[in-house]
Length: 278
View 1 (tube, rainbow, N blue to C red):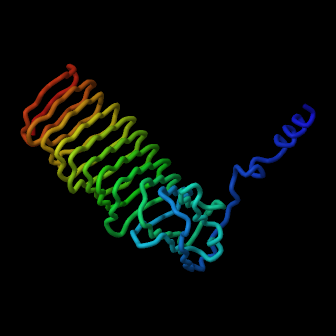
View 2 (cartoon, rainbow, N blue to C red):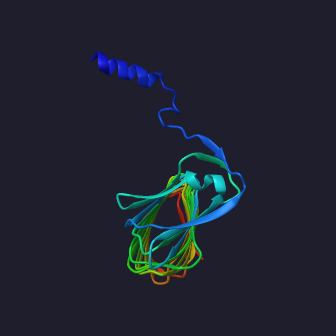
View 3 (cartoon, one colour):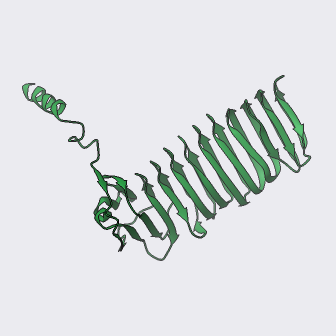
């Protein structure tokens, strides 16, 4: 018992940063260099943190090229842990002339982006199935050709744009996140928006399902879909395009603008919601 109390006192006596909870600050020396290394350990997931910009490209083996200030090379960690490729900074980088990573990968099935980081692609990436999670003001700028299914989750001011080809697409967004998406071809699309999320859609889809809550914004007037289902508990304007049919169940005070002259099946509509055919 005495030993436990002594350990507790020692821990409480240490400053916050000594316990490893706060990173030391460092500035780049503005002498930019590049290094390249092969990633020998296998991984299926990538997790990026700490305001790092990463470009993804496909290749025959996993590797990376890091371009940054010479004194920051050792501060950027690119390491595999439990089949997860983790990219983060060991110190808090307050200023750098450049901090850019190119990751060449065989394939992945999961991408997690945190802390103001940016992930992009210079060309279309072919992947069979993919799960994307963005948090804490992180961003994407991706062109993806998905063989089967993709799920995308945005939260806490995450945002960006994506060009996407996939059979099944799920996009779930909340907490002031926003996305511009161009869908080249898709069989089934599901969109979930809440807590002031916003999405702008363009392209072609066979079937669409929309669930919109709160003050979220759905702009799908340029997304051509054969049939759609809209569930809305919303206080903003909603724009939907459907060629053949649309099922609507709406609560709240939203104005629902319908493009494409579809047959409308009205399951529910409060007195404060309006449907406007364009």
